[in-house]
Image 1: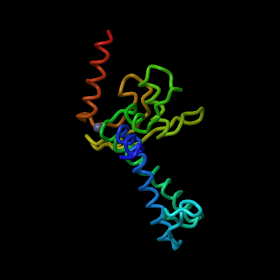
Image 2: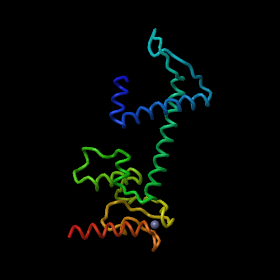
Image 3: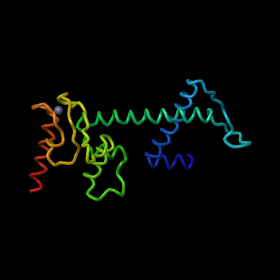
Length: 181
Ligand SMILES: [Zn+2]
C-alpha cells in the first residue's frame, strides 16, 4: 500500500475527495469529447513515460464549469429532499461542510442559519427569503422561514393539521422546553 493509499484509508474524507476528483476528471473528458473536442494521452511531464488522458484546455474548462454548475444544482436538489424528510438545517449545514472556526460557539444555531442562508439567500432590509419545499409527510407546500425562531410553527408554515413529521417536531420542541425549565 502506498503512503497516499494509507492516508486515504485512515481518513475516509480524503478517499471520498479523491474518488470525486477522479470521477469529475473522467466526466469532463466525456463532456469535452461529446462536444467534439479531441481527447488524447499526454506525458505527465516532458520526457516522462507516464501518460495522462486530457483534452484541449478551453474545452476542459467549459466542461468542468458545466459540471460544477450541475453539481451545485444536484446539491440543491438534495437539500430540498433533506428538508422534505424533516432533516434540520443544522444537519444540512454539517453535510454542506459550512461548519467553521469563524462561527460563534454554541454550534447549532449559527450553523443552521448558515445552511439556510446558503440555500435561501441572506435576509436584507428589502427582502426576507422564504425557502419552499414539499413536506415528505403531509405533502403540503411549506414556506420555510429559516431556523431563527424557537417555536417550529414560526419557522415552517403550511403543514397539514395531522402531519406526522410536524407533530414529531412539535413534540421534540415541547420536550426541550420542558427539560430547560
Ligand atoms: Zn407536513
